Length: 61
Image (cartoon, rainbow, N blue to C red; front, side, top):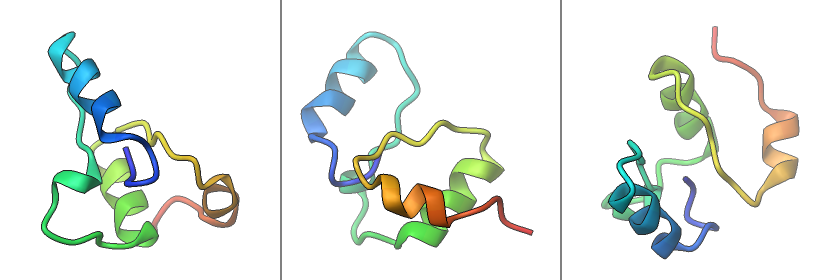
């Protein structure tokens, strides 16, 4: 989940047993490309409110 999504949502999902990584728990936001690469590498779903970024991005090479 990116930082535009309320962090409480991550807490709720974690409490219900979901494997959630919220960027807000990181020391610094690594940026959209790094987030997309990590999600692809770890086969994760991205939850974001930044739909424009998702449309512009593609799977990493």
